[in-house]
Image (cartoon, rainbow, N blue to C red):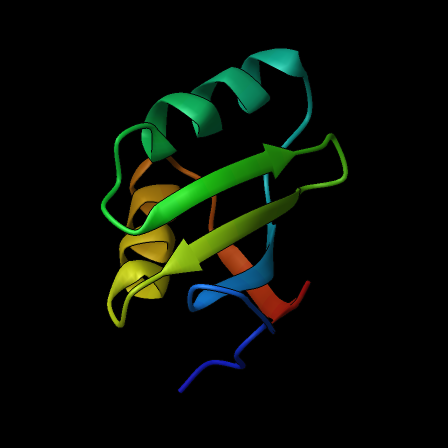
Length: 82
């Protein structure tokens, strides 16, 4: 089970995924490409410290984001409320 982020109007949760392997702007582009178009993902912002802040909606969005990040080569080390 994963922690749930702060609750916003409309049932949107904000979570911060901490991932390994982010070293350069190209990594940020790769993350953006991996997350583009995911169902339930309302917004995402990544930084060079390996923190991806996402706004999620729906019961399966968290797992879709985790799967997309790990599939792109960025193992998820932790998830915390945003």
